[in-house]
Length: 369
Image (tube, rainbow, N blue to C red; front, side, top):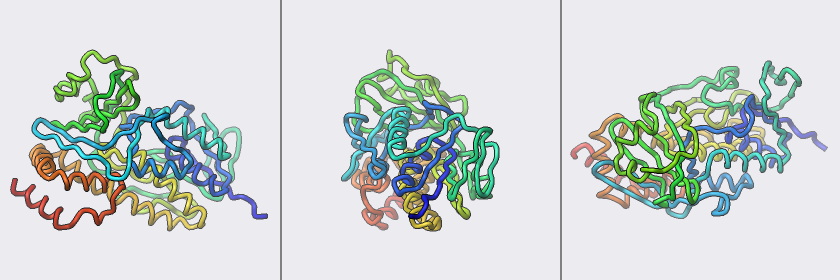
């Protein structure tokens, strides 16, 4: 009987634990190390797009109305335009990140993953990792240790580009959701996300290039949203982090692979973060089963293509008030195109669902508007 191979993962956030579940489902012996201890939180929109929901299902985690809040689509609005579309053939789900993390932990334990909390890696070797207490031999090493990944630096995998560094802050409010979609409010140089995460709670996040623009400071720029939140009690402390577009030409080297934010990032305004991580986990599990990380490299590039394109579009809208106003006005005038782009964004429709002629026509109208 062939001995089970060892997969050691540094980083026990959602990306790392999802990767461990995917590998464990394929009969690898999985160990996850993290210097932190649960509950582990991080500011994000907390919405999972339909293709992320489908990837979680492959990992054995089934989101439904009993453990998360469904949302039907996305609404963009600024001072002059409102455009809304629902996902075609899929549903998104939202829940507190800490709750999602616990669901992942429970599933990881169920599949036999060994979790080591408060474990500080003191030594990295081509054959093993070591903490102060123990050595962990590995056949495959996975870096899921975030934007400033130590594994990435140790493996010599460099970012090709980092663009549009911005700052995000998030907090929750006790208020009954007034919408069944994720709302994205646009103003000069910033956006606010509203994500219903429970029947009596919403998450609100702000993204901008200003590290001093926190949620409460940003709200006056969005009078309609401020009015809806008037008198609502905050139910969490505000958390902040940076966000940017970072692309890696390679996400594997020898027996080492990267996943989650360690393998590149898209701007948080796209709402892709968690969904990307879960898709990557499934692809990584398949590649480990084949013992072929080049297969993961190719899958990773394919998974990231649409999110990278969407990030570039949204950063352009963020950088130019004129472009943003024109784009939202045109989307409002062509709701069918916005709906198809949203379905492409959410992974519920193929790229062929949007005709090249439509994009060319939209771009021409944007230039002329």
